[in-house]
Length: 269
Image 1 (cartoon, rainbow, N blue to C red):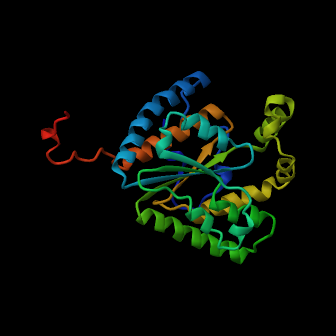
Image 2: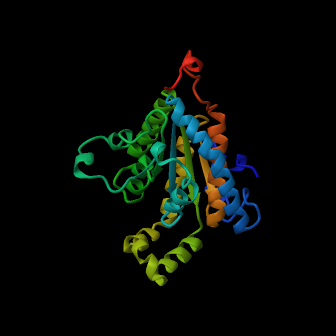
């Protein structure tokens, strides 16, 4: 298995058409095998998270973006279920409030970045401000270009201050989205997931694909890479994200802090 084919660190020649949403470069070969692989990886990730929390000097920010139904919620449930809740936090960005709109668009995002020793998962993120805003014409091309520059600077600032960034685009096909929306309509237990606005946004599929392509191309850097993760298969998606996290957290060189001097001489009475 390899995640190298998913990593984007420079966007000069990046095009989404070069990535197959049905590809399975990280699969074990079966859905059951994929689930077992995620379970095994969860044990390794749990230990790495424990070290990160104990060190209290490094931070990890995971950005999940994708079309509606691409599996952002499912990724959080499937990949992070074994993590210690004391050290991990999921943040879902909805339409900005009046209070948030009164400030710059990155203000509400900076409030939610991880503290020392913490993992934060962004379910949608600051990238909404160059996606939906661009697709619906709420900002023009010049403003979008300025925001790309501001986002690169924001992420560079986070990295320089001890935050490791992992940005995952959950890549699904239009046909797979149709299938998942139909499943939500057909299953009473999934009705709560269905939002009529999803059908409205689906009409802008091509515009969103172009907006994602441009945003990824403009903001992929070696320090804040994007991973274009095939997500037509839910089990493969989870294996891929878990593999990406294992690779990333291993590279962070996490370790338990040295014991206090004289700890061996302390006696509990």
